[in-house]
Image (tube, rainbow, N blue to C red; front, top):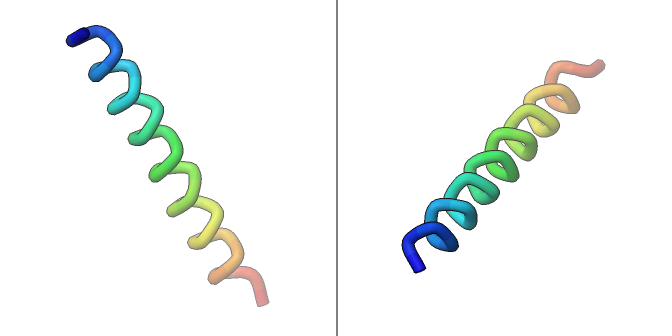
Length: 30
C-alpha cells in the first residue's frame, strides 16, 4: 500500500516537473 503511494507521488512529481519545464521552455521561446 505505501509502496504504491510512494510510486504515484514520484510519478506525479516527475509529471509536474516536466510540465513546468515545458511551460518555461515555451514561455522563453520568442
